Length: 258
Ligand SMILES: Nc1ncnc2c1ncn2[C@@H]1O[C@H](COP(=O)(O)OP(=O)(O)O)[C@@H](O)[C@H]1O
Ligand SMILES: [Mg+2]
Image 1: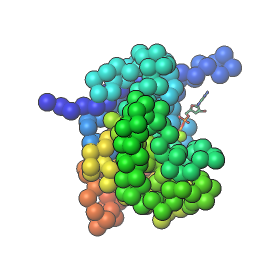
Image 2 (image 1 turned 120 degrees about the horizontal axis):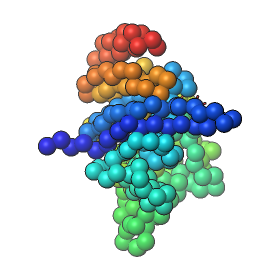
Image 3 (image 1 turned 180 degrees about the horizontal axis):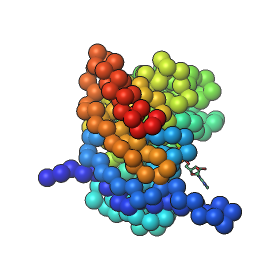
Image 4 (image 1 turned 90 degrees about the vertical axis):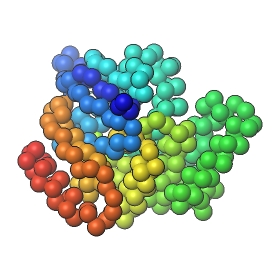
């Protein structure tokens, strides 16, 4: 039996700008299985972010169907959709939006307090325990009480990963999560995402960085709103294979017109 988690069927997104119809996504089709780590690449403006936002229901799609864990989410009314996003999806962005005047720790737990678990004292204890566990795992426990302005970019993004994971999502969506980081911090963030993936997290990630994409299982190449190609790398295991993975991915990207 297949353990398909995400199915995207004939996804279309059209924006109307100045009365002109702009077809940003044109009949995208792809699936993900549980435990997949997929990267989306393509030129700037090709529709990568739009795809991530329409698939995850942050933005409405124009046509098509998205199924998450067997449930068709693309037809859900906004309130139900936001519950799905809260409880079943985790998000990581290039711009690390966190609430000012709250500590790193509070930023991590806040969405869990809004979920069902947050309604009881017992549930909140569980949330606090899990938040500590995540912060230890991502090596940011020492900055738990810091203000969001008192940490480095890499630490802040690792905190964002904790926040994305706090409700134990079925899927993680990441839009250029390393885009604002220096190469050392970017590598640390990718190491964490790889670790989470090995532990079973399913991740769909947009990136323009070949080093980042080379650590995923499969790369989808988007151009003008179509998936123009797909390249399977297989699971990343260790650093010693990186040069070769980057080489074959680069050569495929060149063929795709990158
Ligand atoms: N809210 C919007 N209204 C109109 N056009 C948009 C909107 N958001 C994105 N676009 C257009 O959709 C195209 C794809 O954008 P985007 O998905 O952000 O590309 P990418 O992430 O691949 O760089 C661009 O041409 C962009 O101008
Ligand atoms: Mg984008």
